[in-house]
Image (cartoon, rainbow over all chains, first blue to last red):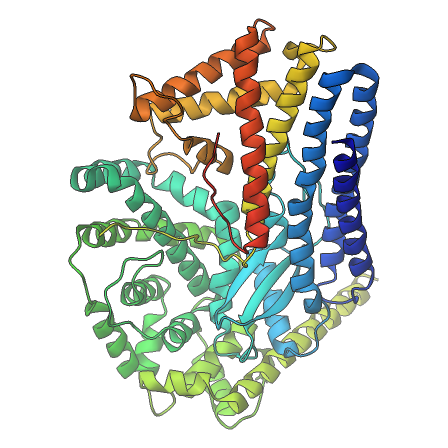
Length: 440
Length: 161
């Protein structure tokens, strides 16, 4: 057994060395905080090996014969147990190491991600883009992922980590540079906020309603009511992310959503609410946020289509479906309230219609204009102008799908996003200089 | 039709979270076994064992949940460790009781043995039961963590103890 212990100890040490060597070879630049986090994590494992060594030495002093043999078997397992844990670190490093300082994704999109992370997660974030073979959008907060160990009994690799937090943003590998779908990223980044705090806040806010739901669900489903609760929680999280995305990016999220996820004709109960129910929620939220006058004026046919589609939901008639659709509707106000309280800089309905009209006009002609009448267009104003330009003169749902796949048009929008971010920073720096001059 | 959910959050194909949580449970089990061996050899006291106290709290919460399952509508989701232990096979030896009652009975015995051990009052039989139980947890969690990495997914292996 003693020999096994040495083998497993060496196995762990070698895994740690390989991880450290790879970290040393990582590039610097965007996403380089991956190196800081992984180093922090493997330091913990190194300390664990040292601690086990000390304990083994003490056991050899204190115990003899069969007792020592038995206790060494447990220590051997403790060393062996490090391997799968280190393998997950190895896996995350191997998977995401190419995301550091990547140059194959438009800088405009990277700027947009910075804006989103800053707004929804906090400034201490280092976003990394991973090109995923599954054509979907999602995020992985790596610190949260490595922070799952029980500190009382195991090694918690991320515990005590104070550096900027690497958050992986998964983009469809064959179509990463899609500016029109950028609002979908707002939904995905919101998942991190939901996981960290909004889910709990929503649960607290709707505690009374949940008790009523439990009683009703038990009356209908008996023991299966707990499964319904899991689906309900998942639906609340998804609607919360939708609400945050709508508050942050305005109607662009609704346009991106139907272009990315066309309304299904099949009834389903999954971890997401039905697409058509979500579209109804989007319309309702935009009405509450005061966007409908602008939308009804600019895209009237599209708005009629949204209303129609969200009323025409294919249903299975299953009791769970009926119950859950009713339950989720009863908490929509709570979901929106939590989202609104969370977002500190919402994208409010545009007053100056002339600026928006001019921005649309320029983008329609392929000009990435970002400063109109002295006003710099914000990130989400650029995206909204981009979407409204798509529907200019042809406000039909199919135009969204066509525009999403128009690479040239998306390139113009990405350039506009890049310029908007550059000019905004430039203006901020100029203002700071001016303030400094005034003060002196 | 049964309503089922899959993991809500995005997971890559190796479930880091699952490996982390079952390894944590396994590490606790290893420490409990070590502390029992040391106590039986007379070199330390179980009343001073931190891991035994953690294990006692854990098993107590599993017993409470088996007796009165926390309903998902009003309680937050329990930890991976608790959910693992909730899946303990209930029939381990032939006897008059069966089903949930047998499982709870067995967990209550464990909980009683842990409480006695924490007061340095456990009998030899109780210490043997605890050693066998936590050795089993140690082996099963190791197997599950390894399988989750090698099979590229979280394998919720059955606890064979």
